[in-house]
Image (cartoon, rainbow, N blue to C red):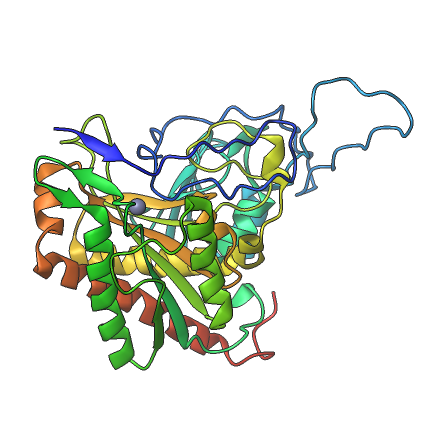
Length: 390
Ligand SMILES: [Zn+2]
């Protein structure tokens, strides 16, 4: 059995090339980005968070006019201790292991966090943060980015801020097309591009019946532009042209190794500024680049989790997690956006399932339910300018 991906494009961004375009990065053109959940991130030297202060001091800027050492400096992340984070989330904190493992709860929420891990468990679902929690002095610390742009949106969406308007226009992006077949299962003669289009067309019908205005980035077997970078850019442009409230890119995944073991569903949001994407353990200088997709970090998280939750509830497949990557197609979109991996074509039983119209219909219904949940959450937060403040 062999799987080919015809879209792998090197990222081509050097360590020191801050600000260079990431347009060459591909959605899905990679092996599965999940690292073992117990793997800790090797970070630049973390600050030692100080007692009585939830946020570490920012890096001291270099004196002007002096030649600097060649070692690049990363901006230090701001860290919030878990006691402060629990208060912000309105959750009760209990230590399972003091300074190492904590449980944050209320009637509807059970959030488990642990030292040196980027994966947290929220109501039984796998959520991948941007940086591992740090144990220091009998406390645990989470980055302010992970607290405000991931955990707050998932647990207390009312704290995100103003809702621009009720979501009504959605762009659905069937991944790949034309000469770009996406993932290929040669043994079963299956192409990802066929299933992304069919699932998207099914999703369009369901959403239109629920009152959404739906635009597909492609409605037949074609590539939007001759070059892959331009093709991905065009998909994002369409969302801007129709003033979309939501952008959903549909894909199916594959891995080269452990094909019988790796299966399940993944939902990706765009990686926040200053964090490494989940496929890379180390931070890099170009992580500091601010992209249009970062304008909606918190909404991206809420949207991704709404869809993850609905897919897992409805499809009962393995939870590969709520993740983040710096995918080109998400980078350029200026409305809340997610990329869904609706199963693994490299897993024979899952590939056979994906090949059935019944599965793709159920997948489309699950995604539609997630979008309905996202919309009703926003409706509860109130109209534009009337949202709750932290
Ligand atoms: Zn794909």
